[in-house]
Length: 235
Image (cartoon, rainbow, N blue to C red; front, side, top):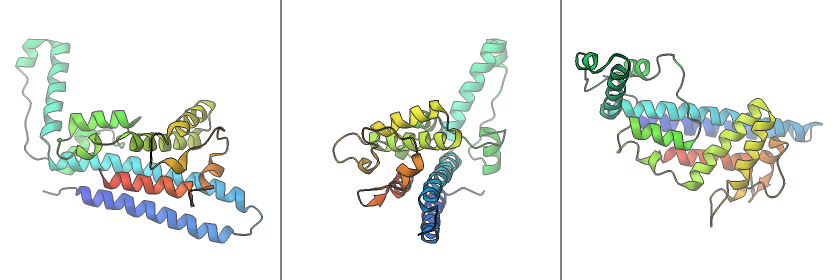
């Protein structure tokens, strides 16, 4: 039976993120001393972080599938409970008692994908709290330990990048407000690994300019991406 290897899922995201940073570096060199260098780098910074975070969302979805594929028991027990509760609520205890749930020890990846996401969309999570809840409900504790152990700085980093992605995608006043709220708190606590990402006292209007700017000797764009890589490696 084919299994999806979580190690390969992690390596795939790391490779993609590294390639995106290399792509940025190549284009940065080509843009040097061109008439629109600053603006082009701002736009490139936005699109680069957007693409990396979309890949991170795909990574989280694939990683969850990989872990459930390795150990189907927790998801199966949760699914059985939800189905039985639904039948009982809609049709009563008599119907529930006459309904059989087929238990499987193993499930192939294609059947698992159809079971978890019959519509064919990747699983997404509105924030880290929802991610932790889903992992706790569906993934065995041994495999979900990395997600459950996500600390405050990692949580704020992920939720902040998601807010930036939403602002880049939508540009709405609401998404801008949420992004600035997240950026104002992304670096909290002593020796926080997110310190280079703090926006300071002023709100960010041009997120591309913020991302391309150097902080602690490195473009913030790279700091965001490398932090996502480090987090992914620990999941």
